[in-house]
Image (cartoon, rainbow, N blue to C red; front, side):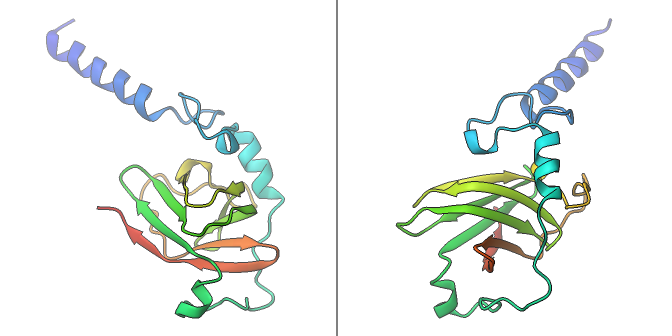
Length: 160
């Protein structure tokens, strides 16, 4: 085996170890966030039990400053790492929250601790039909949190 082939093989192996494989687990290295350390099958089954609320307009449907005070969250989308970083800017933890991306893909988060950030990887998002976001070309137009039947828009920005 030539040195070039060995080097290429080493680069590919390292990339797989760092990023993980698209297997039944959420990643090769377990997620340190216990709430988000589940298998792909569990994320998919959980999404199948969720429904995006489309029948009634939300009381927090716009992004005026007074309404955003009710949901003090901010999101940053890192398209290179394929993750949505959402931070709870309040002094209160939010429990039993669904994170909806583009009104199609969902991930249930048991708790958003106060003054803490959660990283929602694209790979753990599923539609209720079991579809996953495309591997390339996903552009997030909106991220919303659903809590107690109310949907809250999250201002999102692209990561640097």
